[in-house]
Image 1 (spheres, rainbow, N blue to C red):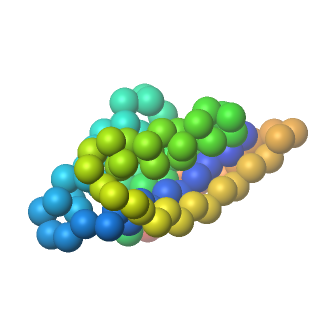
Image 2 (cartoon, rainbow, N blue to C red):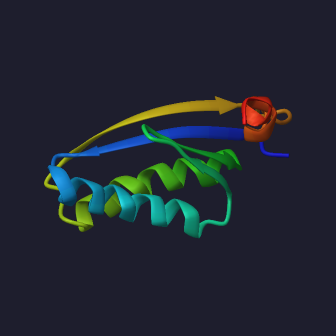
Length: 97
C-alpha cells in the first residue's frame, strides 16, 4: 500500500497548443514512473512512496522548464501517512465510475 498520494496541476506560462504540449511532457514523466496514476482534466493524481512523490513533483517542474516554459505555477495536494497507508485512488473513485 502507498503511504502517500499527490494531485499535481502544472500551469506553464504558455498558450494553446504549446501549453498542452508542455503539460503532456510532465504527464509523460509521471506515467514513466509506473506508479498508479489517474489523469484528469485539471490535475493528475499519483500514489506511491512519499519520498518518490516529492522527487516527482520537482521533476515535473523541471520538465516543464526544459520543455520551453519560461515559468510555471503548480498546485499540489498531498495525502501522507508515515505510519501506514493512505486511501487508494480506487477506494476514492471506483464507485463513481
